[in-house]
Amino acid sequence: MAQVFKANTDEAAKAKARVLKLADFAAEARAVVLEARKDAARIVASARAQADDYRRQAAEEGYAEGHARGMEQGLARGRQQAIDEVRRQVEDQARQADEVAARIVEELTRSREQLMQEARSGLLQFALDLAGRIVGRLAVGDVRVAERNLAKALDLARSTGELTVLVNPVQLDQLNEFRQHLVQTLGLRGKVSLVGDERIEPGGVKVVSRSGEINATIGRQLDSLAELIFAVDQDEPACPPDEQDPLEALDALDERGEYVSEPPAQESQAGDESEPADRAEAGPDRRAGAEEGAA
Image 1 (tube, rainbow, N blue to C red):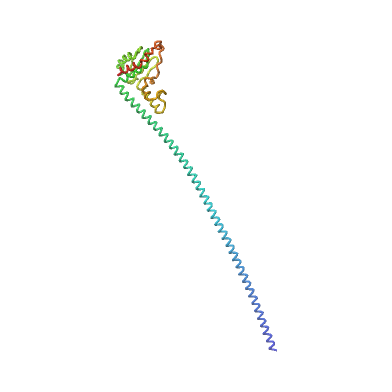
Image 2: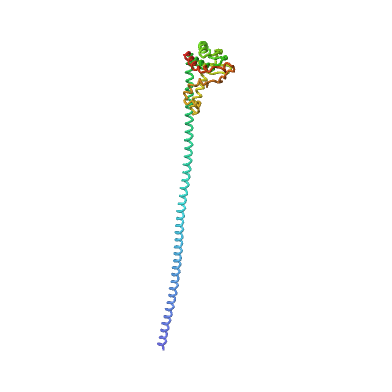
């Protein structure tokens, strides 16, 4: 009996041991399952984290690439705009520089022409002043200058009325002697009187009559010459169209009476109106005789 009880006890102990072992196995299995679940959760979480990292990294890289591309495109557009703006400014400055240069050249050309004109005028005036001084000195020392002017003035006057000739007082006596020769040579029928006048420079004469006056002073002749020269220098017609050579105009200056301030009109007397034509034709011969007498 005791053996049976012991045997039963052993069986029960073994069964209990087996139950305990099964419980341990179950607990261990549960622990393994829990651990596996935890590992799985960690793996999932890690995978999710990595996925988030990948997505974020991809987004950041895409943003950076897009930003870089946008920046590059923006910089390219900015560079092109800057180049275009600089080119436009350079073209504007070049155009302005060309306009300024053109104005400067035009102004310099105009100034040069003006300076050249002033220089020519100054030289001509100087030459005329010098000629006036030389002629003045010659006229003071040589009465033939006054005699020649007196002969031309009386030849131009050709009046039957009374003529008064104003001369420099210093040359009055010498010209009075020459006057008698001129009256005979020119065939003047009127009275010719010489009067000394301080206003008349040596070498010059002024004939006064009822018809007007003939100014044959040195100063007036130089003024006429100056007007002629300056007219030629300024490309203006200095002589009538039928006279081509200015030198011929100078030679004919006195004979045309251009220095006559008031050209003498024809006398109203019947004797002057009926003057024979042969006298007018003989004028040049008488002038030649007067000049020979003056010499």
